[in-house]
Length: 505
Image (tube, rainbow, N blue to C red; front, side):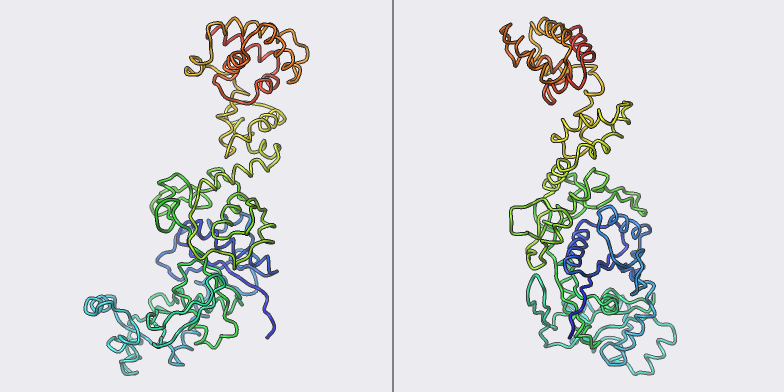
């Protein structure tokens, strides 16, 4: 049989914000497709109409656009295998439901929720399967004419898949190897509901993957229990030759403690678990997003790629192209990956360093303008060059850098007590006189002249520089003093020095 072109899919449900675990699943699918010269399909699984949330689909699409993960076909992208929303494929699924019923591989069940609840109370550990289906109201226990009449009368029903006991089902998983599950533990899953004329996830998922020619299904570990059912469904339809290969990714775990990463963990520890800010239309609750928190999409991608996969080298910083080249699905961990959000912050810092000063300046300029400062872009770029290695996010620059643009109006009390000595006003007056005489106010010339003066006068260099910094900055922080004074220029440096002398005495 000729080898098929690799086709993978990401198929979220529009039930709310896209969780960061879903983003990682999509990323691994994207990397796998690109690595094998394949195609990446975007499908919306919206068969559960009761859980639909307005705006969720648009949110998911915008998230991937921000992240730079591109699909080849699907919802909003088009393609030859559509429609790509399951709610628009009702007529397609009905045909396959009828095929299973005709071949005695599925059956119709009329049990009401109340009847099912009563049976659960009566039978310990009840599940609807080969051992219990004979005591329920379904087409296996009822005469055909009664079944037909109930349907004709508009009684609601479901179609259940008939799973026979006593079989070992093999799932060939690219990460976990040969996973064997006994059919006895599976229940007769509902495949179709007459109430909304829509299939459940299990049937729609299999039919879509087959018709869309999906060759590999890469999804979260939480879907592993459904894999045996999907294997049986492929067999029931006679599609063994086109059954995709599975890969079930490790869970993303809490940064601390045990269990799966949740939004509550993000709220508790102060980090986002959604790519973009999410406004819940039902509750009005606003949840933070990586974009709005100031993360670069490349940093988020790099961070997520290494949660559950390791290249086997010391390298940590990867471009998307490098990830495509090095990614190996077989090297994904079987164990869950702890969500180290501090590492995510580290990645963002590294990407600030990687980006040019011009690019960071463009991002920082709105913060400068927003604080009422009108500075040429070149001046903003100079500040970025001095300060970007000190921050994890662009938004953190303004609190650290504002003194470059706005003179201090007050002086940090703790720093004053520690750094402004009894003779500081006199020494700073001498320094101001020295600087006033300089025609060349470059960093190198200032440093040469001031150092010589300190040595001549026998002053302690630390005392001079600490007082100088306090005068110009208002606190004991910042880059090299001559970098600051050269940027401010002679007039502004002298203005700030003299104001500090007058204020602090």
